[in-house]
Image (cartoon, rainbow, N blue to C red):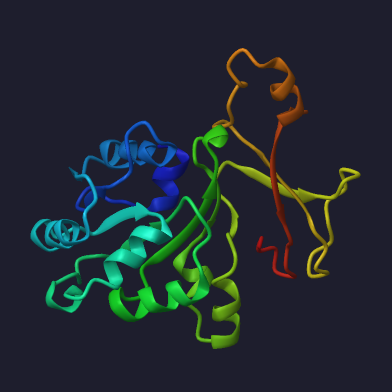
Length: 219
């Protein structure tokens, strides 16, 4: 069982829709349904066609970026489709704006799962599960919409300042996200200099800046 297989929580009875190009890191999601033995539908994205496929195939899970999510939920006929089979959508590829997340909740229900990863980490790193964000405390819920969560299973994540020290939680201190785990690349092809700068003591330096709140959630 791989890291994403555990974190996506896809089951053998799910119907998975694969929208990502197979050469793209997110296209690696194709291994999730294969490992779990569930039905996988592969299509090229077009809003109307995608909504038709979700309804016809009773799609329960897929992952995609905010742009595609927006095109789906803003489709003029979205309410005419039966989309209640969806139980999970992995938000990937770019930060999910808070207003778009809230709109998705209105149209599709509370099905979003936010993830953070890079090609160099095989699209793994951090995840914000439903129980982390769909809370009774509305103020906290709204705040969590801006988070990328905590480290995935079998991954180590930390945020460090320019001196290499982990930043303090809940102090609005900014640092760089570092990731360590079995999915990290071995290096850049024929580029030892960039590999040396990106990989240090087993940690991959993402180049992305973040803060960590008092509960350990990364933003």
